Image (cartoon, rainbow, N blue to C red; front, side, top):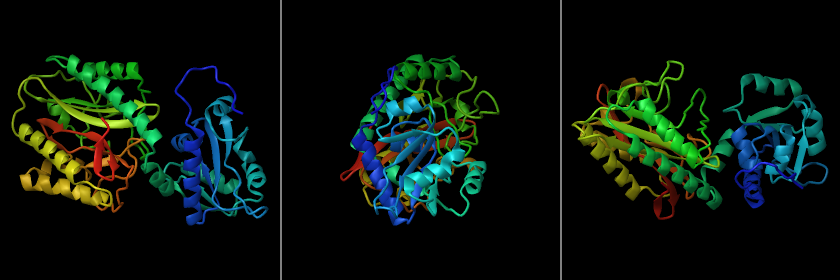
Length: 403
């Protein structure tokens, strides 16, 4: 039985939800002929166990030789064991003082050392991988991250409730943006008002991204020429930021009349995210920004009408790109020059960059239950950026907006 927690927080992930996720992972491991998965990523740990405490989760993909049955999933916790007990719905939770005990614990759990073990290669440091190789010689290591990311792409009703909560947080943030945006206000001051409203509404303050060397705070608040400043972040917009060590987002520039103020925010609640973009104009938006902003809305409306289960991610991107090309604005679509992004949206959930990316050459079929942030944007160097973004869940009938 789980220990009682002496702290207040959101409700634990229901056991039925965790059981369903583990069973789906086991099915995928069996199909890939992987005997067991060894999970360490904080987000994956939370998704499958209900806690993000530091440790290792073991999920079997094939039966043991002893009884031909799957051993129950086992959570080995390095820190904090008491909190993992309070938060996780798993029955088997044990302390793990040192990772060097892993061979013995694996053998006791599985009946022998598994020959094929899965790891999250997309996020596992090379040093940690080599440590496992030395610790468990003779094991064949395989990448299970694509299996996990495909599973996580389809959301349950429980997850959609969390994302609806994130949308409410985003609504509070945009209300603060409208109230605080005035000529002469600095971008960073506007961002601070937005972020404070988000925290008051329950935003955890962290936007997780899975891709290597990618990071995000609450989003981008960019006025006028700031919207055209490129950056390393995998996004159509970058912005100057406050320092070259984190070169994105709001800077010190003051808002001016008759220019675009792009507000691209990530709402968060109970770990889940929604992505949303709106424009603020203190006066009148000049051409060509007005033309591009109208086109962004038209692209989004077209995708809302046409997107259906079974379409591929690449087809969605292709439809948006065709509309941008027909208008003559393709050079500015989703960025400019060498910073032009080759996508029009992305999956979203516990992380900002979940499967599937709505990108060229991504032939992933879209499924009912996938949550997608669709963000047609146009970037004009020296002038600014315009666009719109909503987060949706895909249903049999098409897209249903969450924000």
